[in-house]
Length: 468
View 1 (cartoon, one colour):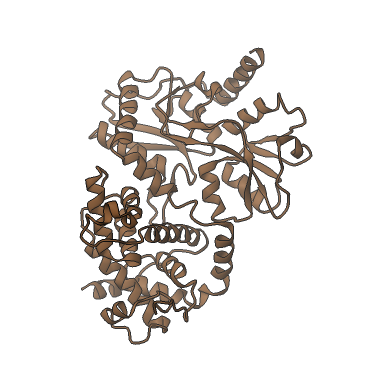
View 2 (spheres, rainbow, N blue to C red):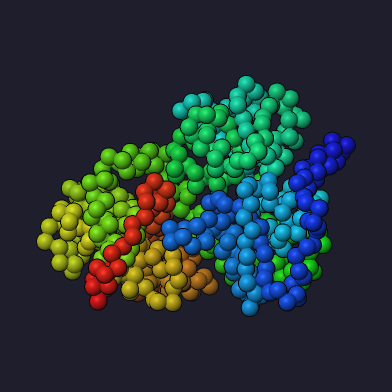
């Protein structure tokens, strides 16, 4: 217990270090103040806040914050304070720089003495990560005593390792200032660092970019992720935050959002990613200009089209299935005829035809369905046909799920092979698991391409002509 309070004192002093004399707790106006804004503190990262391909704010914490303010503080502005790393989040909150910390914060004992946590919205598992091309998988923590281990300073990982060090005296590690978990995972992938610790959902995302990252073993019990507020936070704010998370858990909004950011991350295995990265460098360059031209025609991101093509044919223009589906976009004879294609093996015909067909399917999906769910359902229809997607939406409504959310529709698609369900639907049996795998794989491939391939600015004139 003495060690715990010593750690707490050190952590508190570290958090408050650097406070200017003018800074004070609660320096932000109360919620009822004339300055109508809710301020969130967060940091850049794939699991928090970032700018997407259109240079617009994105990330699960951004989306949650935007939903919260829109629902509970209509007429209020939302503002984000971006700090350099997660270790700067709670200090900023304690110095009165924000009302709420929405930063993928793990609930820990030390942090609970400093801030007030809302109801948790996600459970994660800390994992020890290594490079399987450099090191062998350890059986326990005692086997890594001579290895270089680092985690970002001020994180729950550092707190967990400090606890484990009491039982594993040979465990030595370093808390690095001015870095983040993504950077340390990249160092492990590059062979610079032997081990680091990261949350399971972030590891799954990063493994899509670095297939040599592997989980060695879990570190301690599972953790909860939650928003944090100062201990003296406005009581109205505290109650509304907890009400918000209770509401979005019940109505499925939270499930849908988690699926949007993490639902695809575990679809690909190491071999899938390794092969894809190799062909990204060797084969894709031959077709990039055709995918970009297809984007000019349809407005669909060329990397989405390239991801669809790879999932269909592995960018093999001569690919032919046993059912005579052929070419880079694996068009059926009927689809080719519909889109005016005379040679399905010709990439110059196959790629734009596939892109136009996806747009045709998107136009079939009800307009009320928002993005990206609208695109996901169009992709599912590309794989299995729109009729079966519509059956899955009907079934979702029967099962009290949301027929306009991909996270719910993909649950009912897999039920279309079950006679208990398909016998009651208009279009009958379907191998509904196939489109789910297809869509999630395409999402993963597109995410990888977005990391390694730049966006394309479409020719607006050509797009308008094509759409008209």
